[in-house]
Length: 207
Image (cartoon, rainbow, N blue to C red; front, side, top):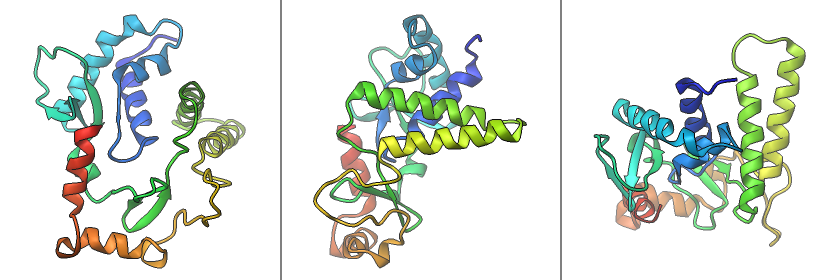
């Protein structure tokens, strides 16, 4: 099946959705997800679609950790990230185990997975999510949902926790009801610690 611009766009968004809010992706990851065996010829189109998305304000283009204007010609390696609007207020806990969305903790994927394993699981998850789009027989949708669940469990975002120090799982719990309460309170009140914006800027500098 030919790769379309819409497919490239969906691949970029799916890959970003799997990462921590402040993380970035390389355009080659989207190309590999779409054409694992022959991804290099797809790179100019991926960069073009990413540029168009940046102009729409859907993603940000970054070079050396800084956001750059989506203008042509765009030379050198680039990375893609969520826009500032999306990332502000979604900090990662100091131990890297969760990120916060609307005051609720969401478990991050296992950072210790080998790159090739992570890439395979991401492709599996993207395929399953694409299978859930549009009108499909219920049996196919059920199978796709099961595939999503399997991939997320393998990534460590669901099921048993990926850390081994005995700490409990607070996935999907309100931050205020967990031991991360004081840490999150400091983010919301700059007088008591660094602001969320400062943390976002610091993370962008090393993304």
